[in-house]
Length: 167
Ligand SMILES: [Fe+2]
Image (cartoon, rainbow, N blue to C red; front, top):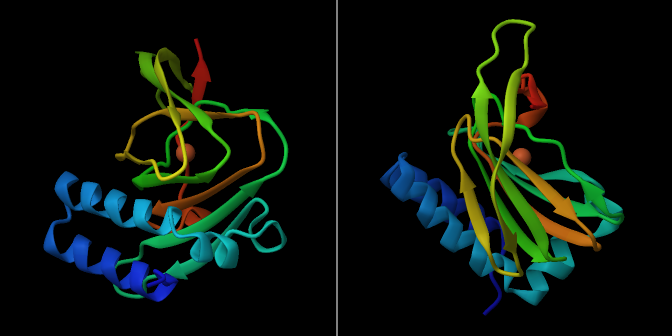
């Protein structure tokens, strides 16, 4: 039976209520993975028309998390970033993506950016979902048409990101 956006959103809300810590986020990764592997879900929600580059598919009125669809049609080397005060889960539906985790070389302050260098990289493939906790610095490298689900702890339209620069 198909996994619907309503079910996914309600399952995420339940997982966060059961455990707002890392275990709850890992449970959400499992739920996102299930949606990513559902052809009907991907075809219905992750369309270029709607999601290029980002569409909030669901925003939870109570807990504030968002389920977003992202579609990128061109290759890109992403810049290292965090999501300010929010956590995020990246889940890949199409277009293998190299993710880079960055380590802090020198912590910034105020207008001075935090300097970072690459730490490790790994590839997200269809069905993979990865949790980035608050403050974890990462960047995606895309070489293909890419479709993903990103769950944001809070709507990133309203979250200020940290100043980060390659060392
Ligand atoms: Fe990110």
